[in-house]
Image (tube, rainbow, N blue to C red; front, side, top):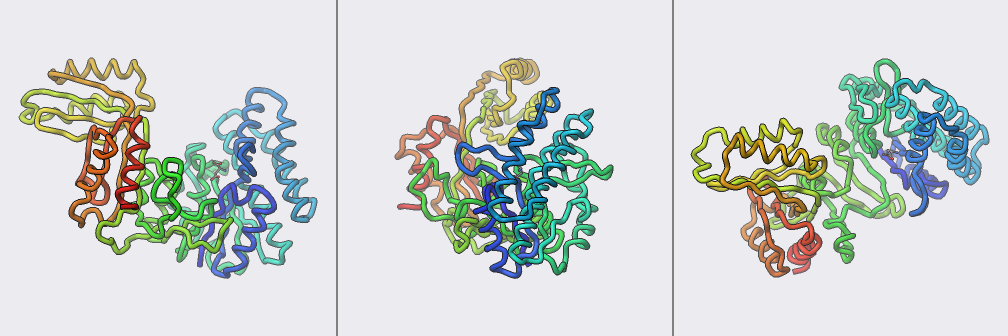
Length: 452
Ligand code: ASP
């Protein structure tokens, strides 16, 4: 059986919802359907989740939210009219929204989550009705009734493990099609709590793991995952057919917006393949993300890159003989709350690479002073404006000449490699370059591995 998740663009309007119904009814293995809140209908539109956040902020600021509530209700009313659904569904959504607006605002996070969850909850209700109007035996299932219990970290909740057997019991082997809202669950005290933004992916993955699905189909608005960001290399046409969980993780780390990072974990742990597919072109097979695949020699699965890194270089003669140098350095960063990403080292030098976000000038000054005081280095340089470029593929490890190919391509493109990490990970090569060279580097590597 299959668990399917449809993202915001797939429930944005009545046309998209009709596509979902066609897709689901075309395959009787599709039994559990997770939906997001209606997303953007076009580039200028606003996602329902953002409208709900705006509305909740108005309530918290003591403003009258009536206009916002009306606009949100209208998003659902449009769907109701266009799909000829019973009018009562809109009245119910309006009632539900007002009940949330009038809810307890003492705990802001809790109130915000109750508002945000309305997007998915009402989408699931209206989508279930749409299935019924088409003659399908579909039911809306509420996460609380299904046993989806979360921690009370509002806006950033995590699943409580005890939910798995409950979800399995309520959702396995049902005769009806289950329509399940993504993005939220309930605390043990019965409060609504949401996953981080984009969290409907997490819901889908959890349900797939709970019921032991054969595949978790994640429907979005692209044919497949591309091997390189089409914004950097517009000529890329062919998507990735298959990749492993490890490859996906490395690509996602370096900025591939495939999935919510956390979303894969339940499916990965349960060994369930993930299939990224396009609601608008369901005949496309999409990208399969699997536990293992035959690593073709030399196979690069993708090239990812991300900006916004900072690098601390430290030089000290005889550093290699000094026991505890690395620990002391990392301790300084730890005490400043800086999480490091990479730490390449030489005989008398070491670099620490980390994300620039949150590294304020004050924090930088403190780190520099502590390094001088505790480590007595010969030289310290802190540089901003780095990008990391990753070449990822299970086959890299087994193939001679891959690093040569990559470095040659970068040299030809006049990109200076500031740092290189090859070998720490069996399945990726990482290059640190100046942010200004990022696009050039990605293009050059794409040409070398895909076009040459
Ligand atoms: N609707 C939520 C968001 O916009 C969750 C999701 O779409 O996955 O973040």
